[in-house]
Image 1: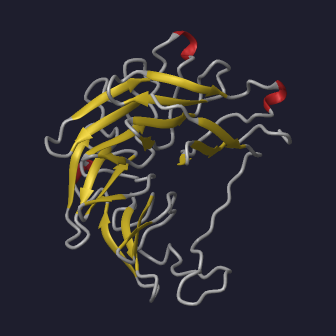
Image 2: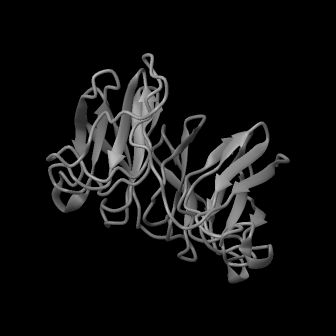
Length: 281
């Protein structure tokens, strides 16, 4: 496993968002709204960020669409025109998925994502979507056993295999890291959390994963040595999990506690956020 340092930005409970930052086409900073959701079936409540594919932005909404269970949409940043590519729960019993919280990724021209609910057992899905035709395919429905339940985050592509997390499910019911082989379409649990006493290995990962040199890095919202969440690493060759840091290791949790967001790797340093803790509590 690679040697890597961890830096966290901690803060008070709360959230902030930017609808669309305007920096292109001569923009001098500031903000420009390209599209306001909720005008009809265009989608409501976009939870995740957007993905740029050849100058067009793609994203998901948790609600809205023709059935009210979320959408995949695209926005042309030049014109602000928004197009709904797919409305979830278009199939009976929402077997096509429902409520996509995570961001999308693109692999060889196809969009991939997750839904929090829906699928054959209403425990969430991994799906693929053709942006040219709007055709959606469910690659995996969660809830068949210990494969995980309710994925909230997006996916990470490592050499044609998609990796992600589920918030619940797995051998102990506290979430998993899973892999899905795009060639075979098979899903495999890489690691089940709370596999150690008192969940010192972490529990309930909300966020997605960052990959660097055969290692996955992520954040568990709970668990760890102090039960306030942890930064973890998983060796892709062995499946071994290592806790890199347990939150609230400092007095009054000045080092942060709890995290719903993922990490990014910048030259061997991991950066992330906590939604609570810090100097102001």
